Image (cartoon, rainbow, N blue to C red; front, side, top):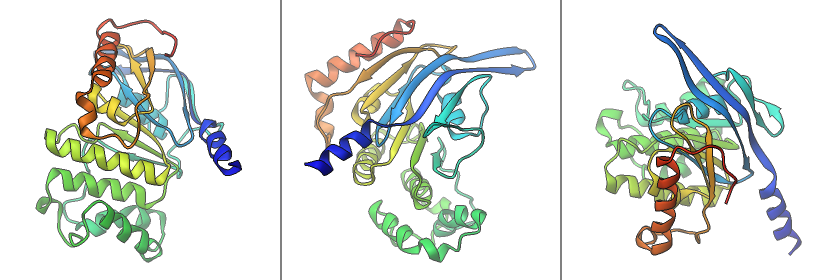
Length: 270
């Protein structure tokens, strides 16, 4: 009982805090106003999806959370400390798998260890377990050109999880995959998240994907991205693909789509 209460209390702790995130890009043709005054929290062990139309600043926000981009105004906090540069507790999975074509799968996965000066052997058991978990055991010597798109993204997931981050940021990682493979990957991410307890922020423009994965969905308005609404997703886990055809799922999808279509000023959370 006490252990359960302690886990619930830990889950309520704020892991990431976005405060007044505002970003202006200066280009040759003028200033692009990407984000304006976005603020929200991500709790420990939570899976939060950031959703919005193309060009609303979703990826800009995620890159700021990773420490790879600086904000024009505002800040991102990890455990109460401002993120000003890439942080070892944060790993990021990009829209493309970004595997180096001249390295085989295992050498691609070991690249972060080489950069950090960590002998790959020190993480061999973890890497092998992750490869088996995502169905890539036996493909260690294959090169990216020999792997399907879904397999390449599985490899990028292993590469990020191998360093055992506290926070996993995912920037529309399955957008280029076909619908069937995307469903498989969403099931995989749900399973890995439930097993690992990682804090995950997942960027997508796919409403059904966000509802399927998320504890909460942060909806951004069209550019400049502002916080339009936060939806609490009260659906049982583990979630199955059959759930996506149920009335409550469809009602939630319609409500979220309406909040995006209407643009929306900042509104209170459900």
